[in-house]
Length: 277
Ligand code: PAF
Image 1 (cartoon, protein in one colour):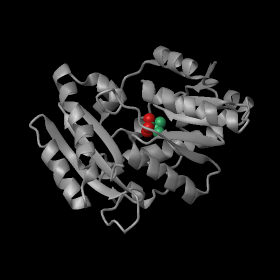
Image 2 (cartoon, rainbow, N blue to C red):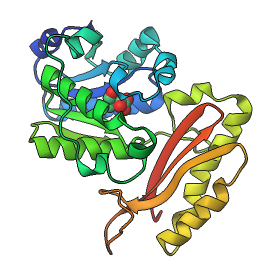
Image 3 (cartoon, protein in one colour):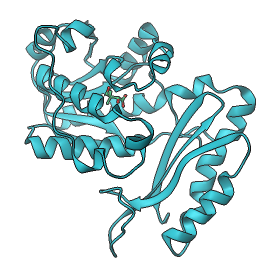
Image 4 (tube, rainbow, N blue to C red):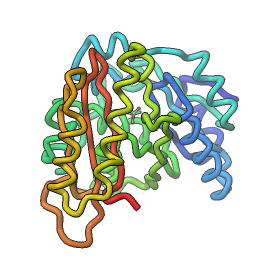
């Protein structure tokens, strides 16, 4: 497996599927990489599946969050190798953000600014995400890219951005992988203290509990009741249109339950389809 910071070296191997990550890889990322490997194989892409690992400073609205974001490159390389990746692209900050020609922040789609979810609680976050994803696409020129459903709003933002910029990259969603008790896998889970880890499962349990409600309003009431615990600081717990993430839900449109909550110093997000089958 190739490891390089050079986009030219990646491109030399031919068209690929890109799995953009910030490292600290876990079983959820491994599933995205396996999906990328399969897709590259099915499309006969000579470059296979390339995993980018870059902790992107511009998407952190809290500098201390950036500073403490886990950096585990050697363990990450092991995960990539076992999942069948052909290469890891590990660029320097200078490669992504050259001082002489900083990449622009593309115009943000409405879903990045209007819903009042991650856009409201992490101001500037999606500007950084769009900037880095656009830059990665232009450096690597992938045929397709895989993004996890765990970051549901991010997935909608990147899909809308790619569409509006006319980028020639297929965006593929990857299913969320969960711990046996239902907690969505996240690089941040490692920061949960044992007693916080026990509380964290309340998030997926609440989303499952509201999955059979008759209306979005009832579902949100169930979410509020189930998440009303002193250890949990809920930022949002809502049912929204799955595509626009607006609260106006037109008949027949798919919906999504979305939750963000802090437990101690750890911020967790999760989502599920609503209603649940
Ligand atoms: O989801 C992530 O890990 C990041 O937001 C991404 C898409 C790799 C951009 O830095």
